[in-house]
Length: 199
Image 1 (tube, one colour):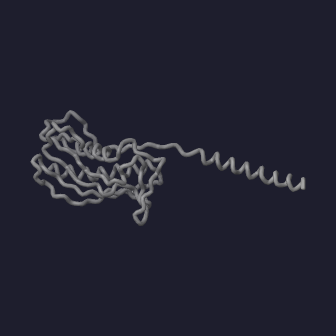
Image 2 (cartoon, rainbow, N blue to C red; image 1 turned 135 degrees about the vertical axis):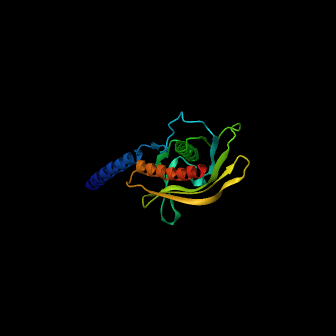
C-alpha cells in the first residue's frame, strides 16, 4: 500500500512540473509592435505661388479597419487580426495624412490639406471616395481598392467617381515589409490623384 502511494506521488511530481512550465509559457506573450504609414513623395516646401487648395477626404474606410490591430486577408474573405502588430494612429487618419502629403509632394502649385480640415478652410477642389480594401493578403500582396472622384468648391464633379485597384508585392514575411508595401499602393493612388488634379 505504502509503495503504491509513493509511486503515485512520483507520477504527480513530473505532471505538476510540466503544468507549471506550461502556465509559465502561457504567461509570456510577444511584445506589441507599432507601425506608421509614411508618404513616399514629400514636399520640399517653400516652393512657388500657391494657386489652389486641395482637400483630400473624406475617404470613407470600412468598419473592419477601425481597429488598432493590423489585418491580413485570407482565402474565402477571412480576416486575420494581429493583436501584437498595431497601427500608431487610427488607420483612416493615416490614409488621409499620407495621401495628402504624397499629392502635396507631387504638385508644386497647390496646398493639400488632409481630412478633417477646419471649416474655415475653403478648398478649391476636393478628393472624395470610399476605401473598399486596404490590407495584405496571405499570398503576400498589399491591396488597395478605392472608389474616388474629384469635385470643385461648388460640388460640381470634375472627375467622375471610378473604382481603382493597386497591388504591391510584400517580398518578405514581416510586418515592416507589409507596411512598406501598403505605403507603395497609397503612393500609386496618390500619383493618379495628382495626375488628375494637374490637368
